[in-house]
Amino acid sequence: MGLRNPLAIIALTAGLLINPAQLGAQADEDDGLSQSEKESVAAAKTPEDRMKLYLDIANERLKIVVSASRKGEKQSAEEAVKAFRTAVSGAEDNCLSNQVPEKDRKKLLMTLSKATRKYNFALVQALEKVPEDSRSFIQSAYEVSQRVQDGADIQLQRYK
Image (cartoon, rainbow, N blue to C red):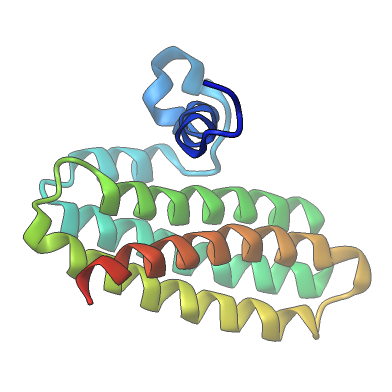
């Protein structure tokens, strides 16, 4: 089983893309979310509720990323980007979770795709209006959002 085997590459890559929340004690690194946000997500009873929470967090952090980047507030922008990336990735993980019934997955993926399209549009517009030395924050947020959008769109192809 060499690395020319696509399944071997996927398995190897999957091992590298483990969600930090799944690592238990190793998840102590700062993901940018407040304790109350983490508790709210953990307490959410349905995948739809978790999705709403993750997207609400992402929306709020997106506003902060753009505002702080425009003002050159690097510390605030960096913290907001961390939480934005965590929330968008968490929303994606939520869609793909085994806890989501197959009949509900399409709706969640469509919601995620629509949200990330909106985020990407706002981030591209913001990129034109921020100082050069603050663009890396916008780009970092955009990279994750675009990756998640692409993944959701690929998953949605199964339903066409």
